[in-house]
Image (cartoon, rainbow, N blue to C red; front, side, top):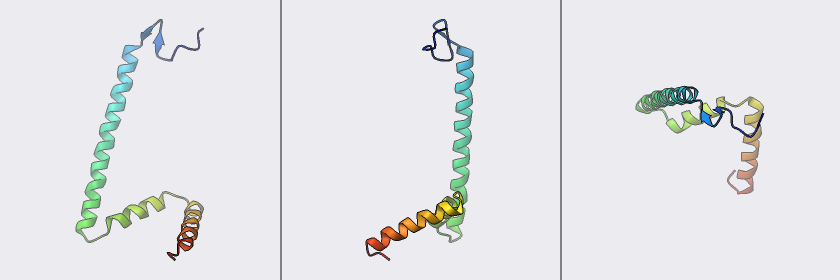
Length: 88
């Protein structure tokens, strides 16, 4: 068997149905991703309208995604760099 032939190609022909299904699935996921992004934008607009700082909220979300040790290491490096630049 020739291992240089990409998966999904059989005897020189693309498995059209399989390819179409994969593309349609990816398109549906892209649409869902857009919908979720729109929902997040709505939440941030609501937060802003209530007087919250959206940049701070986004930063907190970013921090909460990390484990405590990873965050502490990043903060230590940041503090070191800021101190070196005379900013602390």
